[in-house]
Image (cartoon, rainbow, N blue to C red; front, side, top):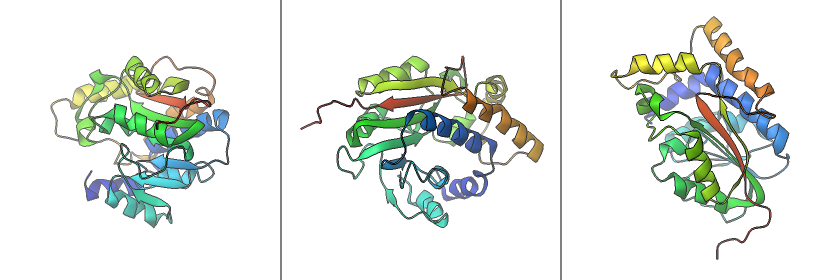
Length: 245
């Protein structure tokens, strides 16, 4: 991402319906399944919204972009490191929680990233991933955000299991808005690269979209949603496991 993209993200993400609602859904799942008080890392933390919002969960942030971390520091965040998710500068088995929100889709070798997440988690530790779903929806929005792929449900499931994790929750999210998003993506095909998450909609639209997505926080901790724009996966490293030599 370019500097201007991080500037726009930093300016709108704490008010934008998509970032706020995703955070609400993620927080709901963490509150239901993951004990507080451990050592946590927000990987690909961007400009720091999640890290700022969940200080009891994630105390450290990592991102490949030094520009993103500059904006994170403007939020008063200091425990930051510039790092690649496939080569984290951390000891093995040092974290209780790693959040990785809308990141795997940017990485060519996502299997290596998942293996690295497994390495840095303690036995019994948790990783929470969100990724875009439905390859058929790949559009100008994805190209603007430098996505390599959108995932199928079984594709994400198999890659997480192959990395050695147990799956605690795997569900589609952003369910109600799938028809709207699908139509918007179809209409954008053939257009220039353009993201729809770096501009703040009009206040009534922003509020309505937030309500439609954030309502899912009442459901995802207990039951799978039937479909959605994205996937959420909470995975756990087995409590009894042999660390690589």
